Image 1 (cartoon, rainbow, N blue to C red):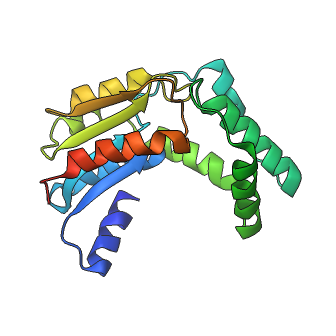
Image 2: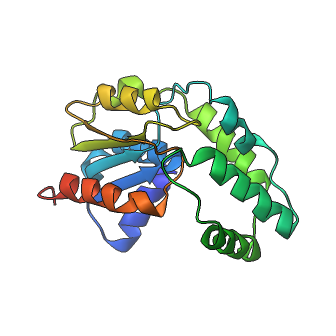
Image 3: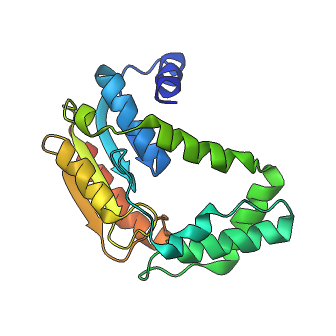
Length: 196
């Protein structure tokens, strides 16, 4: 998938880009930076680890249930997952989140995709040593209440990259609540400024 992202840059005629990834996307962004360093202006890894995952907290295990295939059951299940993963500081805005998930279901879901994502994460292995070769500006953003990828995974990622900045968001779990967007965008904006 990291190679696919580079092929997309090729197709768009973009020589180098600021790369931002969240969760598995953060892991892909790390791989892209490792494998294609000349194509990356800066790296922002959010809610990701360096490939040596810690055991999720019990409340996060709900995220590993097989996805529902009936519309209302699916939405109820996803809202339950959001509540478990969001963290104590941020409440789930139920009506808006419900509509987002109804739209997602109506566009089409692929229940096997979740299992494939987990297999891809496990199969990719550790990136800790390879991250030591990263020489682009790097920012690691992580919530201190993440039950799925604990904060230690973000800390380890930041420690593996030379001069990486670590930005910890108090009370944020493994989800991007709208109330945290201004802080996240400000951190990314400050990080990428002057690296174009």
